[in-house]
Length: 164
Image 1 (spheres, rainbow, N blue to C red):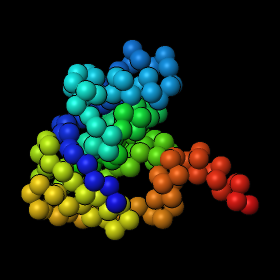
Image 2 (tube, one colour):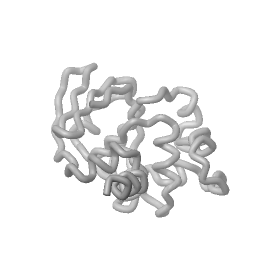
Image 3 (cartoon, helix red, strand yellow):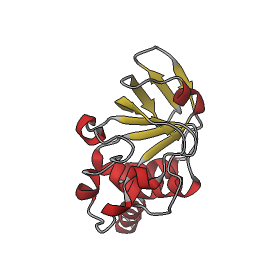
Image 4 (cartoon, helix red, strand yellow):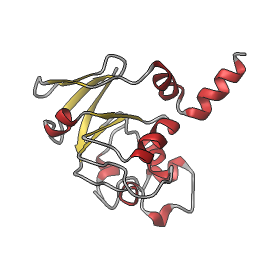
């Protein structure tokens, strides 16, 4: 179960807005986190609290295939991204890096900045604690839930190999 305060962004938020290309000379998550969403909202990192959520429109994460974008979001403390839809490569990179993401057009359309959401990834439920509205989405498979819980694909695989 995740619970957090919402930061809202629009349609077509691209990977250069999530982490500007001028910072791609590092793969250090802490350094990337300092510049997360800087070109979309220069105050984002200052306003962000660990566990907060991003709610966005269509095609979140479009642009390049770099993994820096979900790494920056996760390192900045974003617990989950809820959007109307995701760019396919961003969706895969988010899972691989252990960033929870939910495609739920209804919740994305009916959430305002500062709302507090409660997310149940296993059950496929979102509850807006501010408005009282509830939404459903197809939950991830148990395997994808395990990858996210492990912190990403590599930690998941390492744990699987140790248990054998």
